[in-house]
Image 1 (cartoon, rainbow, N blue to C red):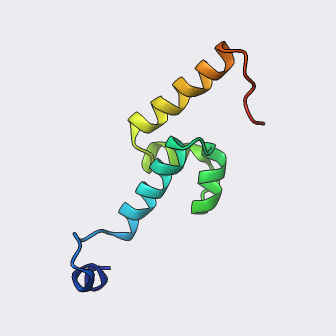
Image 2: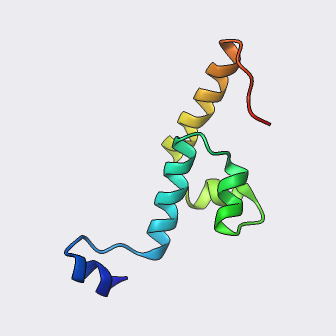
Length: 77
């Protein structure tokens, strides 16, 4: 990864960091924790949410789910 980043002239990132970014962006955009966990190969969405997703993204996702229900909407199963 270091070589690729250096060649591209961008800040260095790690594969683990990219997994975290993927997880956070997915949750922020409404993808369920179970789907994100499966995409990372995790057996448990708890691992994904605790180790990869930024806490503020998880909190925002919870708030959006609550607001959806309060406004009379339905959550995806």
